[in-house]
Image (tube, rainbow, N blue to C red):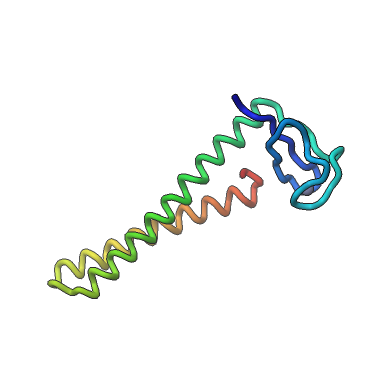
Length: 112
Ligand SMILES: [Zn+2]
């Protein structure tokens, strides 16, 4: 069962609850500045929450790959391993930056 969502018409903050808050937690606008989102709009918000979480997870995993590879380079067992770790760092960096750029795009389009 989904809770209702209310959007602040001043700052676009989305509040989740039974009714709109007395004041916007972000900008302090009063309750009458909030409008209830339709079920379709609410679904869109929840879907983009999950997508943004997935991007965040990809960013975190990429950072973990970079850490591991740096450790592997440090150990320096043999040249092929070091070369592989260096490539993996570049690839993880691309994955990380691509997801970050997408996240920033969502923020600037108010899709969060
Ligand atoms: Zn607000």
